[in-house]
Image (cartoon, rainbow, N blue to C red; front, top):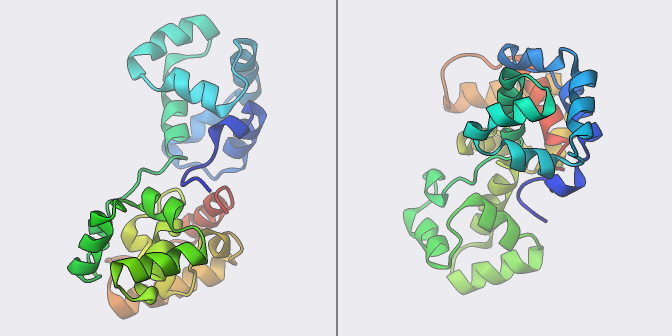
Amino acid sequence: MSYNIDAEKVRLDDLQKRIEETDLVPSRSSLLEEIDGTFSKLKAHGFATLADLRKALKNPKKIPALSKETGVDTAYLTLLRREIESYFPKAHPVGAFDWFRKTDLDNLESRGLKNTALLYETLASPEKREETAIVLGVDAEFIDSIYALADLTRIQWVSPTAARMLVSAGYTDAKAVSAADPEELCSDLDRVNKEHNYFKGTIGLRDIRRLVKAASYVS
């Protein structure tokens, strides 16, 4: 399974539905304005999938020209590009999980497992994780833990530290997060944060609802 969603399998109608069902952050709420008409224009221009649209929006310098071709406002396309790119979290280097022993992390890197995408895609099966632990001479528990963290970082907005918090709270994969009760998850994360002081401040229920929804797209 790929680290990111398969953009070729996401139709433009699916993308529109995701935007409509997402509790957008205030800076992106304008994406909902006249969304039916806007997506009709994009489909009329020949865009059928998320992959098509993402490719066209990839270079910000080409957005003004695309705006003229489609009749969709430049500012809207720029905002849409940001929203779409947030669906494809960048892989984190294994060094970001610096609470593990450096020698174990170095072992992973020496075998080419340098980031979360490579970890997730290479260690997808229990058999492969067991084999990797033996080859590297590390504890199987470490391999299982680093795989769980890699899985969780596939979720929109989840950093290595956020993934660590989720694991500490008992949520070890994206599927578990997507199935979680937001209020319970919020309480669990708040408890974990108070116990370990991962960051200052409080965890908002609204953000956790967004997290649960985001997890549903990669589980």
